[in-house]
Image (cartoon, rainbow over all chains, first blue to last red; front, side, top):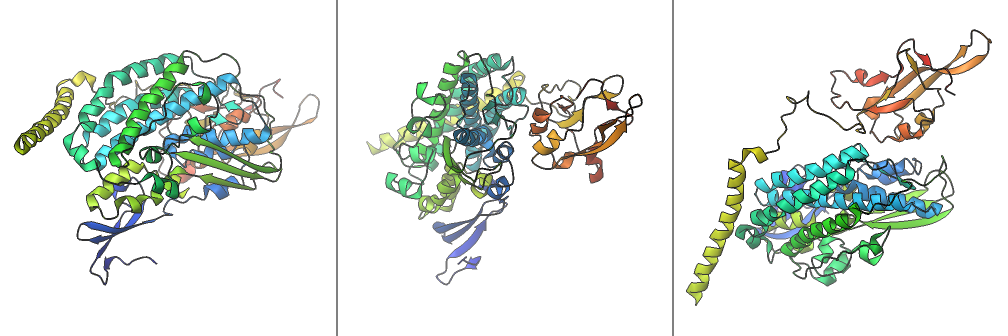
Amino acid sequence: MFEEVGTTTEGDLVINMGPQHPATHGVLHLVVTLNGETIKNVEPHLGYIHRSIEKMCESLTYRQFIYVTSRMDYLSAHINNHACAMCVEKGLQLEVPARAQVIRVLMDELTRLASHELWWGAMAMDLGAFTPFFHAFREREVINDIMEETCGARLTMNYMVPGGVMHDLHPNFQQRVKDFLQLYKRKIHEYDELVTGNIIFQNRMKGVGIISPEDVLSYGCTGPVARGSGVSSDVRKLYPYEIYDKLEFDEVLEDGCDSFARYMVRIREMQQSVRIIEQLIDNIPDGEFQAKTKAVLKLPKGEFYSKAETARGELGVYIVSEGGTTPYRIKFRSPGFSNLSALNHLVKGGKIGDLIAAMGTLDLVIPDIDR
Amino acid sequence: MFLKQYIQDIWGAIKSLATGMKRTGYYFTHHKEIITQQYPDNRDTLLLPERFKGEVVMTHDENNEHACTGCTACELACPNATIKIITKFDVDAETGKKKKAIDTFVYHLELCTMCNLCVEACPTGAIKMAQTFEHSVFDRSQLTKKLNKPGSKVRAGVE
């Protein structure tokens, strides 16, 4: 089943990349079969950071299990919590107050910005450019500070609860977000100067890691990976949740099908997130930030499914309830897992240097894949 | 024609590299725009927001009284069994009635994920999140904390 590390009978070289290779973003283990520098096969081995989150959730109540999901895709923790809270609300048939809906969308978009910024820095670092990483973290730090003030944590917030959000917005929130948007607009051109326009970067991205729209559908890729091949897959547009159907924003589509197209999707998506935040920041309705719920939540017997668009693609939450206080079964459909399955297709026949570039554009978060 | 394209490509490449180098050079010469924080040298000026979730503490007033009635709502709300409340029965000196009170409020910092669910669940507001974050100790047993101070008792009127 697994090829041994060393030389195969055909004279190909089999090497391990990871699980501790710094360029793999985490504990991802790739077994790469090489013919010279040409990749013949890439086989990802998973399970190094498996924490059995789905099984853990079965022993936690509907209030408790949400905090665990922050640890799946930690870069879009808010959106993970949001999808879970929505699924529980669907079961309880709970109406979320208008203020809570707006706060949730604002937090989701800030998270998406922060996630894409980190991806941009890490992506450039994969290709050997160290400076962009610091530039990306400079702006991301401001978002983290905003999160810290309102939610009390920087990465694993646990801010969304069934029925709304945990705290009301901090009094400084609006002003700080406005300051951030100004800063962001002042600095955004640096991103293009440093990386997008760079000739070395363009030559390494264009025409590398090609995946056709048909293959995107057959592998089940979502998010920027699908949109880079022109496949419309934005859950916010196709199946609007909360107030996304009332907002003005474009689904970013590129038809390049290569690494550069996926890169541009994320860069342009950041601007769409800014656009959404600008529409909402002055129009936060007054009222309750949390609906009244019972102390012990019990979902009726049945199956519930909800999905949300994380920074990486479509996250699905599937809850089977037997009518008790804890779920009978929970299944997460994580975007990273499906996107990773396309990796072999992306890089087969290419050079080993392009493997890193193509993997960077998939924006893999390993805890999201293993769960 | 080929030569013209070739030279144009080279010129464009050099220009794109120079643009990036210019941006790097800008920050090399503009030290005021560097935002690095010199932790831990800036400990005195480092302010964390009041909502920051560092560890669970129990608030005591000046009479060494707290608001915890020992209802174990936080213990039930905790997803990781971080909190363990050991209760006892106090005998009221005046009426002679037995009353439930906490003996020890055990808090395992090493298990805590700072999810804030216990603070949300507390009906009397006895516990809150503190802004400490430097939790390193030399021995694991120091992370198991007793939150109620010695000799403290529940505030009168808190039910």
